[in-house]
Image (cartoon, rainbow, N blue to C red; front, side, top):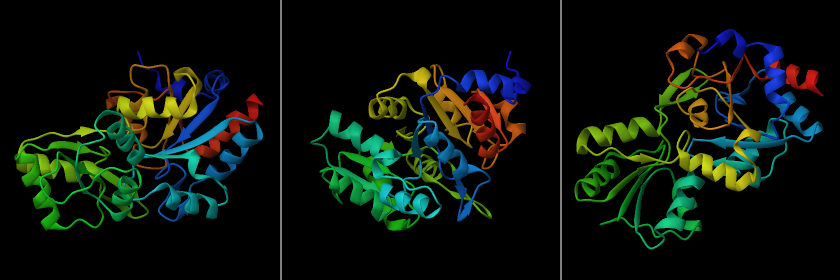
Length: 276
Protein backbone atom coordinates (compact mmCIF):
# COMPACT_ATOMS: atom_id res chain seq x y z
CA UNK A 1 0.00 0.00 0.00
CA UNK A 2 1.38 3.39 -1.04
CA UNK A 3 2.12 5.75 1.84
CA UNK A 4 1.94 9.40 0.82
CA UNK A 5 3.10 10.55 4.26
CA UNK A 6 6.26 8.45 3.87
CA UNK A 7 6.89 9.94 0.42
CA UNK A 8 6.94 13.38 2.06
CA UNK A 9 9.00 12.36 5.10
CA UNK A 10 12.51 13.83 5.31
CA UNK A 11 13.99 10.86 7.17
CA UNK A 12 12.80 8.49 4.46
CA UNK A 13 14.06 10.91 1.79
CA UNK A 14 17.55 10.90 3.29
CA UNK A 15 17.69 7.09 3.09
CA UNK A 16 16.51 7.08 -0.52
CA UNK A 17 18.73 9.89 -1.79
CA UNK A 18 21.98 8.64 -0.24
CA UNK A 19 22.42 6.15 -3.10
CA UNK A 20 21.68 8.53 -5.98
CA UNK A 21 24.60 9.35 -8.29
CA UNK A 22 22.69 11.39 -10.88
CA UNK A 23 19.60 13.59 -10.79
CA UNK A 24 17.78 13.99 -14.11
CA UNK A 25 15.59 17.08 -13.99
CA UNK A 26 12.58 18.05 -15.99
CA UNK A 27 12.71 21.78 -16.72
CA UNK A 28 9.27 23.29 -17.41
CA UNK A 29 7.42 23.33 -14.10
CA UNK A 30 10.41 21.96 -12.17
CA UNK A 31 13.35 24.38 -12.57
CA UNK A 32 11.34 27.28 -13.93
CA UNK A 33 7.84 28.19 -15.05
CA UNK A 34 7.83 30.43 -18.09
CA UNK A 35 10.35 33.15 -17.23
CA UNK A 36 10.11 32.58 -13.47
CA UNK A 37 12.81 30.62 -11.61
CA UNK A 38 11.07 28.27 -9.17
CA UNK A 39 11.80 28.38 -5.46
CA UNK A 40 15.20 26.91 -4.57
CA UNK A 41 15.83 25.26 -7.93
CA UNK A 42 19.12 26.92 -8.89
CA UNK A 43 20.47 26.59 -5.33
CA UNK A 44 19.69 22.87 -5.43
CA UNK A 45 21.62 22.41 -8.67
CA UNK A 46 24.68 24.15 -7.22
CA UNK A 47 24.40 22.03 -4.07
CA UNK A 48 24.50 18.83 -6.12
CA UNK A 49 27.58 20.11 -7.95
CA UNK A 50 29.24 20.89 -4.63
CA UNK A 51 28.75 17.30 -3.52
CA UNK A 52 29.84 15.92 -6.93
CA UNK A 53 26.46 14.43 -7.72
CA UNK A 54 25.80 14.46 -11.47
CA UNK A 55 23.16 16.80 -12.86
CA UNK A 56 21.38 16.19 -16.15
CA UNK A 57 18.24 17.71 -17.64
CA UNK A 58 15.54 16.05 -19.69
CA UNK A 59 12.62 17.89 -21.19
CA UNK A 60 9.78 16.49 -23.26
CA UNK A 61 9.35 19.93 -24.84
CA UNK A 62 10.09 19.20 -28.49
CA UNK A 63 9.47 22.79 -29.60
CA UNK A 64 13.08 23.79 -28.83
CA UNK A 65 16.59 22.36 -29.11
CA UNK A 66 19.24 21.96 -26.42
CA UNK A 67 21.08 25.18 -27.38
CA UNK A 68 17.95 27.12 -26.38
CA UNK A 69 17.91 25.42 -22.99
CA UNK A 70 21.65 25.96 -22.45
CA UNK A 71 21.10 29.68 -22.91
CA UNK A 72 17.99 29.78 -20.71
CA UNK A 73 19.40 27.85 -17.75
CA UNK A 74 22.77 29.62 -17.92
CA UNK A 75 21.04 33.01 -17.79
CA UNK A 76 19.11 31.79 -14.73
CA UNK A 77 22.39 31.35 -12.87
CA UNK A 78 23.43 27.77 -13.58
CA UNK A 79 26.03 27.47 -16.39
CA UNK A 80 25.45 24.26 -18.31
CA UNK A 81 26.76 22.59 -21.47
CA UNK A 82 24.78 20.97 -24.27
CA UNK A 83 25.89 17.45 -23.38
CA UNK A 84 24.05 17.70 -20.05
CA UNK A 85 20.70 18.49 -21.64
CA UNK A 86 18.56 15.71 -23.15
CA UNK A 87 15.39 16.39 -25.13
CA UNK A 88 12.71 14.04 -26.44
CA UNK A 89 13.96 15.09 -29.90
CA UNK A 90 17.21 13.22 -29.20
CA UNK A 91 15.40 10.03 -28.18
CA UNK A 92 13.39 9.62 -31.37
CA UNK A 93 16.32 10.68 -33.56
CA UNK A 94 18.56 8.11 -31.86
CA UNK A 95 15.91 5.43 -32.39
CA UNK A 96 15.47 6.23 -36.08
CA UNK A 97 19.22 6.28 -36.73
CA UNK A 98 19.66 2.93 -34.98
CA UNK A 99 16.66 1.15 -36.47
CA UNK A 100 15.56 2.75 -39.76
CA UNK A 101 18.21 5.19 -41.03
CA UNK A 102 17.09 4.94 -44.66
CA UNK A 103 13.43 5.84 -44.06
CA UNK A 104 12.04 9.19 -45.17
CA UNK A 105 10.35 11.40 -42.59
CA UNK A 106 7.74 14.16 -42.61
CA UNK A 107 8.06 16.34 -39.49
CA UNK A 108 5.13 18.27 -38.09
CA UNK A 109 7.01 20.49 -35.67
CA UNK A 110 8.86 23.73 -35.08
CA UNK A 111 11.93 24.66 -37.08
CA UNK A 112 14.09 23.66 -34.10
CA UNK A 113 12.82 20.08 -34.33
CA UNK A 114 13.21 19.98 -38.10
CA UNK A 115 16.78 21.29 -37.80
CA UNK A 116 17.66 18.58 -35.26
CA UNK A 117 16.51 15.93 -37.74
CA UNK A 118 18.44 17.53 -40.61
CA UNK A 119 21.62 17.86 -38.55
CA UNK A 120 21.36 14.17 -37.62
CA UNK A 121 21.28 13.23 -41.31
CA UNK A 122 17.68 12.01 -41.41
CA UNK A 123 16.04 12.53 -44.79
CA UNK A 124 13.08 14.90 -44.48
CA UNK A 125 10.45 14.99 -47.23
CA UNK A 126 7.24 16.86 -47.91
CA UNK A 127 5.50 14.12 -49.91
CA UNK A 128 4.99 10.36 -49.52
CA UNK A 129 7.05 9.82 -46.34
CA UNK A 130 7.65 6.46 -44.73
CA UNK A 131 7.20 8.04 -41.28
CA UNK A 132 5.27 11.00 -39.89
CA UNK A 133 6.86 12.51 -36.77
CA UNK A 134 4.72 14.93 -34.76
CA UNK A 135 6.27 17.23 -32.16
CA UNK A 136 5.13 20.12 -29.98
CA UNK A 137 4.42 22.40 -32.92
CA UNK A 138 3.77 25.92 -31.61
CA UNK A 139 3.78 27.14 -35.22
CA UNK A 140 1.07 24.66 -36.23
CA UNK A 141 -0.32 25.26 -39.71
CA UNK A 142 -3.62 23.62 -40.67
CA UNK A 143 -2.35 22.68 -44.13
CA UNK A 144 0.59 20.79 -42.63
CA UNK A 145 -1.66 19.09 -40.09
CA UNK A 146 -3.89 17.96 -42.96
CA UNK A 147 -0.90 16.57 -44.86
CA UNK A 148 0.20 14.60 -41.81
CA UNK A 149 -3.26 13.05 -41.52
CA UNK A 150 -3.29 12.16 -45.22
CA UNK A 151 0.13 10.51 -45.07
CA UNK A 152 -0.90 8.46 -42.03
CA UNK A 153 -4.14 7.35 -43.70
CA UNK A 154 -2.04 6.26 -46.67
CA UNK A 155 0.09 4.01 -44.46
CA UNK A 156 2.93 6.13 -43.08
CA UNK A 157 4.09 5.13 -39.60
CA UNK A 158 2.89 7.60 -36.95
CA UNK A 159 5.35 8.63 -34.22
CA UNK A 160 4.86 11.27 -31.53
CA UNK A 161 7.94 12.92 -30.05
CA UNK A 162 6.40 13.39 -26.58
CA UNK A 163 3.04 12.43 -25.06
CA UNK A 164 2.38 15.58 -22.95
CA UNK A 165 -1.12 16.96 -23.41
CA UNK A 166 -0.28 20.36 -21.91
CA UNK A 167 2.77 22.57 -21.50
CA UNK A 168 2.74 24.60 -18.26
CA UNK A 169 3.06 28.38 -18.52
CA UNK A 170 3.07 31.15 -15.93
CA UNK A 171 -0.60 31.88 -16.58
CA UNK A 172 -1.88 28.34 -17.23
CA UNK A 173 -1.35 25.71 -19.91
CA UNK A 174 -1.10 25.46 -23.69
CA UNK A 175 -1.75 22.35 -25.84
CA UNK A 176 1.37 20.18 -26.21
CA UNK A 177 2.38 17.37 -28.57
CA UNK A 178 0.00 14.83 -27.06
CA UNK A 179 -2.95 17.08 -27.82
CA UNK A 180 -1.86 17.54 -31.44
CA UNK A 181 -1.43 13.78 -31.79
CA UNK A 182 -4.88 13.22 -30.25
CA UNK A 183 -6.33 15.46 -32.95
CA UNK A 184 -4.62 13.38 -35.64
CA UNK A 185 -5.80 10.15 -34.01
CA UNK A 186 -9.37 11.49 -33.95
CA UNK A 187 -9.14 12.15 -37.68
CA UNK A 188 -7.27 9.01 -38.79
CA UNK A 189 -8.06 6.40 -36.16
CA UNK A 190 -4.31 5.71 -35.82
CA UNK A 191 -2.61 5.91 -32.41
CA UNK A 192 1.07 6.98 -32.42
CA UNK A 193 4.03 5.41 -30.67
CA UNK A 194 5.63 8.00 -28.39
CA UNK A 195 9.33 8.49 -27.60
CA UNK A 196 9.64 11.01 -24.77
CA UNK A 197 8.96 10.44 -21.09
CA UNK A 198 7.66 8.03 -19.82
CA UNK A 199 8.50 5.55 -22.58
CA UNK A 200 11.13 2.86 -22.27
CA UNK A 201 12.90 4.55 -25.19
CA UNK A 202 13.67 7.52 -22.94
CA UNK A 203 14.91 5.43 -20.02
CA UNK A 204 17.21 3.43 -22.31
CA UNK A 205 18.53 6.68 -23.78
CA UNK A 206 19.27 8.17 -20.34
CA UNK A 207 20.99 5.00 -19.12
CA UNK A 208 23.12 4.91 -22.25
CA UNK A 209 24.09 8.58 -21.99
CA UNK A 210 24.90 8.50 -18.26
CA UNK A 211 26.43 5.02 -18.07
CA UNK A 212 24.65 4.44 -14.75
CA UNK A 213 22.33 1.78 -13.37
CA UNK A 214 18.61 2.35 -12.77
CA UNK A 215 19.00 2.40 -8.99
CA UNK A 216 21.60 5.19 -9.25
CA UNK A 217 19.21 7.56 -11.04
CA UNK A 218 16.60 9.96 -9.69
CA UNK A 219 14.06 11.44 -12.08
CA UNK A 220 12.72 14.79 -10.88
CA UNK A 221 9.64 16.42 -12.36
CA UNK A 222 6.21 17.97 -11.94
CA UNK A 223 4.08 15.55 -14.00
CA UNK A 224 2.86 12.21 -12.74
CA UNK A 225 2.01 10.79 -16.15
CA UNK A 226 5.38 11.58 -17.79
CA UNK A 227 8.18 12.33 -15.29
CA UNK A 228 7.07 10.01 -12.50
CA UNK A 229 5.76 7.32 -14.85
CA UNK A 230 9.29 6.96 -16.25
CA UNK A 231 10.08 5.02 -13.05
CA UNK A 232 7.32 2.44 -13.61
CA UNK A 233 8.45 -1.19 -13.26
CA UNK A 234 12.12 -0.33 -12.76
CA UNK A 235 14.54 0.67 -9.99
CA UNK A 236 14.65 4.41 -10.79
CA UNK A 237 13.80 6.80 -7.94
CA UNK A 238 11.07 9.27 -8.86
CA UNK A 239 10.68 12.67 -7.22
CA UNK A 240 7.54 14.77 -7.68
CA UNK A 241 7.75 18.53 -7.09
CA UNK A 242 4.47 20.38 -6.65
CA UNK A 243 5.51 23.45 -8.67
CA UNK A 244 3.97 22.55 -12.03
CA UNK A 245 1.11 20.48 -13.41
CA UNK A 246 0.47 17.71 -10.89
CA UNK A 247 -0.96 18.40 -7.43
CA UNK A 248 -0.85 16.43 -4.20
CA UNK A 249 -4.51 15.56 -4.76
CA UNK A 250 -3.58 13.87 -8.04
CA UNK A 251 -1.21 11.38 -6.41
CA UNK A 252 -3.74 8.88 -4.97
CA UNK A 253 -5.41 8.59 -8.38
CA UNK A 254 -2.17 8.16 -10.34
CA UNK A 255 -1.24 4.80 -11.81
CA UNK A 256 2.41 5.33 -10.86
CA UNK A 257 3.24 6.86 -7.49
CA UNK A 258 6.35 8.99 -6.80
CA UNK A 259 9.03 7.66 -4.48
CA UNK A 260 9.37 11.10 -2.90
CA UNK A 261 7.29 14.29 -2.93
CA UNK A 262 8.57 17.82 -2.26
CA UNK A 263 6.67 21.12 -2.40
CA UNK A 264 9.64 22.49 -4.40
CA UNK A 265 13.34 21.87 -4.95
CA UNK A 266 14.06 24.11 -1.96
CA UNK A 267 12.95 21.30 0.37
CA UNK A 268 14.90 18.72 -1.64
CA UNK A 269 18.05 20.81 -1.14
CA UNK A 270 17.48 20.75 2.62
CA UNK A 271 17.53 16.94 2.57
CA UNK A 272 20.76 16.82 0.53
CA UNK A 273 22.35 19.28 2.95
CA UNK A 274 21.39 16.98 5.84
CA UNK A 275 22.95 13.94 4.10
CA UNK A 276 26.28 15.61 3.31
